[in-house]
Figure 1 (cartoon, helix red, strand yellow):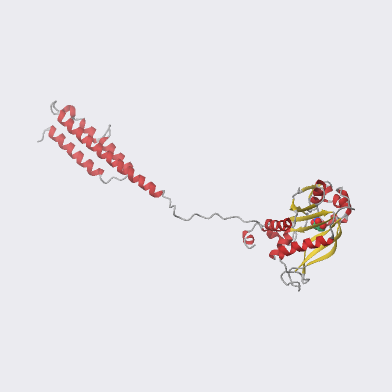
Figure 2: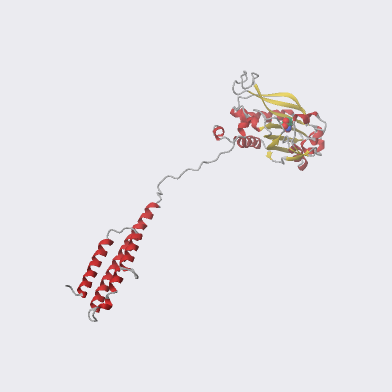
Length: 348
Ligand code: DAH
C-alpha cells in the first residue's frame, strides 16, 4: 500500500491532468469561470481540498507536497490566464464581426422634396413680371374692412361684396382678405409713383367647395401707376406675361367687365391650348379660357391714397394661381392642389 505522501502526489498529478484536459475544449467565459472555481477556488476548489490533508503529513513531507502543490497551482493559473486571453480575443473578434459596417455599400438616398406646383407657378409668374421691372411685395392675410373693401371703392352696401363671401374676424371690421387687391392700397399709401408691384399670397372665401372653388386659394395682384399709362400698356404687359407663361402661340382676348376699383375693367381670356381656339371640352367649346381680371385704376382709388388722378394713371390686374395652374397643367380639380397627395404632385 502506498504511503500517504505518494498517494497525495499521485492525486495532485491526476488533478493537474484532469484540469488541463477539461480546460482545452472550453470556449465561453462562463464555463471558464466555473473551471476556475472548481479547481483553483479558494473555498472549495479541488486544490484547496487536497491541501487540507497537509497537517496530517509528517514534517519533512510537507515541503515536498507544498512545492508540488504550488507548481500545479502556478501551472493551472498560467493555463487559465492564457485561456482567458484567448477567449477575450475570440469574443472581441465576434463583436467586431457583428458590428461590422460595410463602408463600400452605396448610401441610402433620402427622398428630396420639390417645390409645390402652386409655389412654382407663383415663382414663375412673379419672375416674368420681375423681368418687366415689377417688384414683389407681400401683405397681411388678416385685413381690415377698409383695405379689403372701402378703399377699393366697395362701399358697405355695395352689391360687389356679395361676390366675395367673407370670413369675418370682427364682423364689419376685421376679416380674412378675400383678394390680394388691398395690397394695392397699402403699396400706394406707402410709396409715391411710379409704382410697379406684383403681390402673391393667400386669400379666403366662405364659399361652397367644389371642383373649382376652395375656401383658401392664392392670387397674384399686379399694380402699375405712372404719369403716362394707358390700357395699351396693360394689354401689352399681360400679353407678354401670357406668352412667357403659356407659349407664344396663345392669343389674348379682353372682354369688358366690371370691378369697383377699375374703370374701365376687362376680363382676360387666353386661347385654349388643347384645341388652339377651335373649341373643345376643356374650354367648354368656346375656344377661350378666362385667366384674370384687370382694368385701369379707378380715379376714386387714386384719390383715396392721395394720388392726383389728373396727373397719375395706373392699371391693375389679379389672377387666381390655382386657376393658372389648372390651365397650365390641364387639371380639372382644384382640391388636388391642397390635397398633398404625392401620387398627384409627382405628375406635375
Ligand atoms: N380682386 C379681384 C377678385 O378677386 C380680381 C381683380 C380684378 C384684381 C381686377 C384686380 C383687377 O387688380 O384690376 O375677383
